[in-house]
Image 1 (cartoon, rainbow, N blue to C red):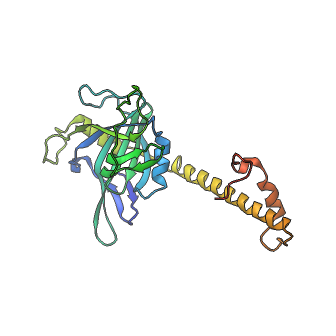
Image 2 (cartoon, one colour):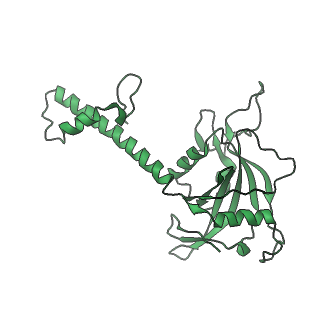
Image 3 (cartoon, rainbow, N blue to C red):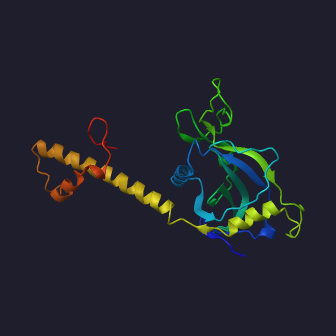
Amino acid sequence: MTSIFFFSSTGARMKSLQYRSHRYSLRLLHYGNHMLEFSSLTEWLMHGDYGLAQCRKAAGLNSVAVTDGDELPEGCWEAVHVPNAFSGTTTEGKSVKGDALGFLHPDGIEWLVFDRDIEELVNFLMVDSKGRVCIGKYTHLVNFTETNDAGDTDKKGRLFDHVGVIEKGNEGKRGVKEANPAHRKLVENLNSSVSVEEDRPFAFIQSRRIKDLNRRLLAVYHKWELFKEAGYDISEAGYDPKLAHALRKPDLAEKEGNGEYKDE
């Protein structure tokens, strides 16, 4: 059977559990993609200390048992939280476990692999009233499926709505013969997934780095110009006429509304 390997932020070599060793129930969720698109969620997780280790993808599933009467709200994706999908040992000999979060859509299942428990992240990840993504553990939140007085769905609140559980079946046994088919399909789908780390997260990071670098270079250029206008000799301060000319190109940075480049 295919296994997933990765290194955690603590240096542990993590490995996916074989299905016969995975005895944990899966949490079925609705994800508010209309509030925060999946690509933006991935980028947000990448730039924070939330344990995201890999992005992976697998073929979709034609049939997964869901809670009776459960209907997917408009703008939402089905999601599944797989707790303790990975295990490993740190260099100090400490045992660690990691979770996975799958997002089901017509093109397949997007899997986010974490080097830690993400129950709190799933329970409290939200978009606040100002459109900011945060973990609102101590904030009273409305569920994103609730409506306001005008009957409109508020695009704020928790991003994940817990709608059901998929039990493994034959609890307490390590065999797989009589396991819940939906449970087995999802765990094995995760283990068969392939990494897309170079396709998406690396591109996110590079794009962000380039934009930040260009903005900072433009700020340096404008400071050069101020010193030059004040009569200072900037030839020994790293001033490069060719670079200054290149930085004048508008496609290298975003202009602010007043026509000046932002100095962050």
